[in-house]
Image 1 (tube, rainbow, N blue to C red):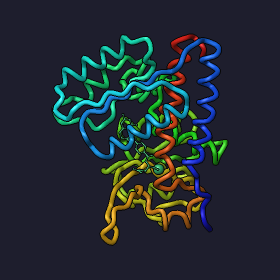
Image 2 (image 1 turned 120 degrees about the vertical axis):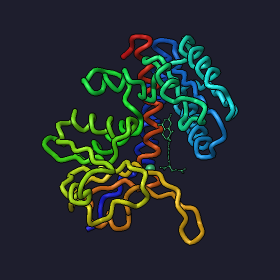
Image 3 (image 1 turned 90 degrees about the vertical axis):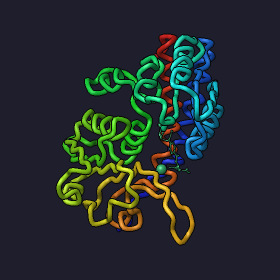
Length: 289
Ligand SMILES: Nc1nc2c(c(=O)[nH]1)N[C@@H](CN(C=O)c1ccc(C(=O)N[C@@H](CCC(=O)O)C(=O)O)cc1)CN2
Ligand SMILES: [Mg+2]
């Protein structure tokens, strides 16, 4: 058996097209163009690529972007002051501070200062709380994108066992909340989980978000399961750099029912969902949601 490959790159392209049409309609009905402020502190090469891709997607969707590139040594107070300025700017519907931040800056402090109504990354504790009690708010982009991919291959998760490997605030915990909302029975597994392979083998839906290259092997997977690989790990193979997920794709594809590849799986959905959250934010701001 060989799994259906879930083409996140194509799904994300379709989503961006729909967002562009909806943003144009919002402009026509309310005279508003959704605005996204993108803040990058430092020169981390991967972050620079992600920010460039976010700005490209913003333009493609017909959204407005404001770019703030600050040197690595920028004091925390300056970043906080910028966030406050963006909070007060009515043309800004979404504020994105690219992570990781340099050491001198307390990420929790910065993310906690972003106005919850502009928190398109969904990292503010208020939005995390809203998600956990089922109130409307911003859902972090990677779990939101992963859930869209899961919905594309199954319409009913009720009573299914979903295992999320990883308990981060950004991916693991919000992913578990989304799966719970779909009435799945959810297990969050992590580094202390006993006999992780055995736990994974009981999963109808397996989401890997641990940041360990190629950890999940084919014999950890229940035949026919949906496997979502959130990992993006840079490794060397035969002296060449390569991007791989947390799942050993070559063995997993033989057992799973459907699986996301890395690259072109969850990653492009993260960026498309940032556009979606920014559009949602602008709609809410003008009472069009
Ligand atoms: N403020 C945020 N910071 C970070 C987030 C985030 O959602 N908000 N997530 C990650 C990085 N990230 C977006 O910022 C991101 C990572 C990877 C991809 C992606 O499309 N990856 C490609 C492959 C990787 C590559 O070619 O370099 C893929 O999977 O096809 C998109 C977004 C941490 N920081
Ligand atoms: Mg991917």
